[in-house]
Each structure stands twice: as C-alpha cells, then as structure tokens.
Length: 447
Image (cartoon, rainbow, N blue to C red; front, side):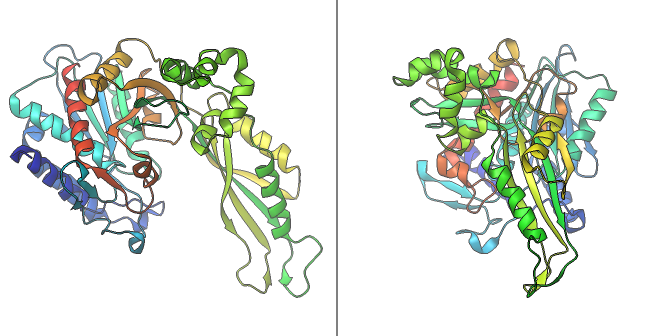
C-alpha cells in the first residue's frame, strides 16, 4: 500500500470518527460535531478549499463551486451527505465511531457508522477533487459539490442548496447522488456484476391511523376496544398489498440484463412487455428488494396505545410507512388505504408525503458519462443498468432544476455490507472505497 493510499485512508477514518448524527428532534443534534466536521474537511483538503468556493448553507450543509475553464453552462453536481443515523453502541462488534481498520490486504475493512452511508462517497469525492486540484487541473464545465447535513431526517439542507442554485439560474447537466451500487446476485439468474444506477426514486408517505375510545380499567374492556380496532385496520393493510406492476425503469432494468441472464429467465426478461402482469406477481415473491421494485409498499411502523398494562387506551395510533412506486401518488395511495381500512371510526391523516421523482433518461450523454466511468474505473465486466431507487435521498430536490438526476454509490458492495446500512456493524472494504475515488476522478475528467 502506497503512502498516498495510506494517507487517504487516514483522512477517511478521521472524518468517520466525528459523530455527525442527525435526529428528527433537532434539540438532540450535536452541533459541535457538525462544526468540527466542516473544519476538519477544510484542514484535510487544503488544495480543494483553495480552488473551490465554499458556502455553508442552512447551518451545516456545504456547497462547493469549482469554476470550469470553459463554459459555466451544463455543470456537474456531485452529492453526498454529512449526517449519519443514530447507533445502538452495544450491538456493534467494533466502536461505531472508532473507524477501526480490520483485516489486511483485500480483506481490509473500515468499520464505522457512515462508512457507506454516506461519508464513504463524500470523502471519495473530496479525495478525487483534492488530487485534481493539487495537479492544477480545471474542469471544462463548472462542478458543484452538494453535501447536505440532514438527509437522514428532513433533507432541508439540500433543499436550501437547490433553492440557492435555482435563484442563480443554474441548470445542472448531470446530478449524481448516493443510490445503487455495484452488486452481484440482486436479480435472479444474473451472475454478472451490475452497477445499479437509480433513474428515479420512490415517493415517501406516512399515514397516521388513530382509533379512540373513552378508556377505563383493563379489567372491564368494551367489546371492541380502540387497540383491537386499530389492529384490524393494520391487518387489512397487510392483507391487501398494492398491486404488483412493472414500471418503465424496471422494464428497462430487465431488458438490459436479459442478455446476461440464465434461461428461462433470459426469455422472460426479453419478452417482459408481453407477460408483465404475470412477471410482476412472480418478482414480488422473490424477496423484499424485488418486491419493492414492482409495487408500492406499506408497512406499520410506530405503534402507541395505553400508558400502562392495566389501562385501556383512549387513543391508539399507528404509523403506516408507504413507499410509492413510479405511477402512484400521495393522493392515490391515501385513497386506497382509506378504502382498505373501510372504518370511519379509524382516522387516517397524512403526516407527510412526497410523490415519486420524475424519471431521468437512461440514454444520452449524461447517462453514458456514468456508464463510461463505471467501465473505466470499476471494471469492464460490470453492466450498468437503470433501476428505481428504493429509498429516498437528497437528490429528489434536484429534480426541480435538472432532468438528469441519478443515484449511484460507486462501491462494490456485498449483500452483508448492504444489510448493514442503518444497522449495526456498518463497514466498507478499503479496496472498494479506493475504487470509488477512481470513479469520481473519471467522472470529473469527463465533465
């Protein structure tokens, strides 16, 4: 391992050790950690900070502008986020903010909250920019770096950055945020590694279901207490899932991978239009990820009831978290849940919601730029394919100012690594992270 590589890893680990945890309740946020992260970033990447103009937006989000040597039109925006989700420290095998380096050679891993989501991408971007800035390189077109500070909660930092760019009349030619990764085995019958680039993301909707009653002692319950009424409503939602269907980006995913699939799936993928309804039902049974690609999902999450074990609940509540597939909307999904619950005594309220994003094209120059960077930096055997991003990201705000918004994290991730996102033992292999730097170098040079 070269001295430069060791220095890059050391910088990455130092930034991972800063606990920039976001909370829905902002009074719990450690503001000093975010300030320390911003200051440390400036200290670790002096060449980038000397060349790029930096603005702090909405408290702790960062917007960098790298002026191009040619036209300011058609800029590139590279996105990531500073914040990470909370941890339950006792569940981890290594301290979540220790950024311990475990193993050697190709087995070396860095264990830390944010290693993948999303400081891995943020630091890889900064490493690429620092290297190019130190060389005296200037991109042909302008480059912006957008690092939100509360993506895991409200995303207001990125939203404020978009408002600023729109006010300045900036229309990005290409926006790239976190999203899919290089994976293997994500699609049945396909053995080749695939770079899953999100061309759209599902909408997010949270409905609150509330049942009420007069309350009293649990020793004399009514025939149908509020908790039972609420449980029936939840059961109805569970037993009546949204219909499975093949949205255009999902159809494009399978068409792209058809030549690489084993039979009989190759034939199925190649003729998906003719058998879409049947295929959608089959895919829905092949695991949670494929199910989420072919239907709007709804699941009960937060539950609350009585304050004590011998007390009847006067109010029983449940949150239903819904992820909207392209083609569904907040209004249509809410109407469907009302029909399914079919109980006027259960109040259904929209707590917050956003429709699915517009679909970015998976053809043309911006898309080809990403595919070329994947080929050159990550591997010639990797197939780049569109798909629908299953979670929400800060990129949703950028669809207001750009028609080419994509979601891809340039790391080769195993199933176990993907499962650790937002869970304990989040980690990334050093080799995979270093390849991400090469990807951003290739993408910036092509811009």
